[in-house]
Length: 377
Image (tube, rainbow, N blue to C red):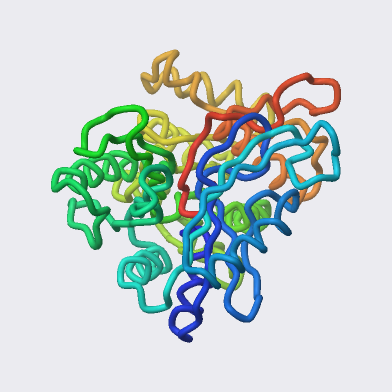
């Protein structure tokens, strides 16, 4: 539910009562992963999605019922062989959905929504399987281990739940954790859904060139916090990049060394100028970031590769470089080029092949990949 935190927080501030349906687990092919949510308020207003349309009508009714009786419910939806138009996922998957009524003044949920809306890191752990009295119980866990709320039951349960939630929060992941009633791991005890809310991952675009503005827009669309960096103040301006979160005038390698990146960060080098590229890529390819790509022709890439080897980069470090950057879409315009770069970033992040799905035989929805990237991942 943290993927729609801003909207839900507004409902809470307006005093609206609402119910939230959250995807707990997914089996087979399904369009939305754990943590995806749909909410219905007492006036029947709907926000969010749990299945891309397959079961939204039935989930709406469950939310309306939960608002009436105040009781959480865990429901499974799957494909019906007897009637493809019956309530179910015609794509062949199975999803479990927890529907929980949320009082507008509930302190734990209110704190969770506020924290997520501010972009601050936190994890919301809820009981999704276990004794009926505990279903829907929640606690909010922060990176330092402090927490609000509780799950009830044995005194050690909250302590163990906090530890498990912190572990998922550290990696920015959303998923389920099995616990026993006394707080130890044990199948058949309690199952928690832990939703991690972390700041948006960073995309740093080096080079305030004509292609950069389109890539900034694509990065924002994908949910990144986008920074444009260029050493030339005449080009790195707000007028040229109105959609960027940050605009930095500095030598790219110097800025990269002093700024904060992590395992979700994406670095796109569009300068294709050796005096910028070589010191920048020498630093970038030694950082534990998710993606490093550089623009340029194949001749530029060959020259860049030679220079990077002379700078001392190893074969393993050089193998991380995506150059020329982007998938082969036949792109010509800045917008098409930005699309090809964005497509390669998504493929690298999610483990995709980049080949057409038609005739490929590969799964459309993979189990792996990054979760909790500041947006519904």
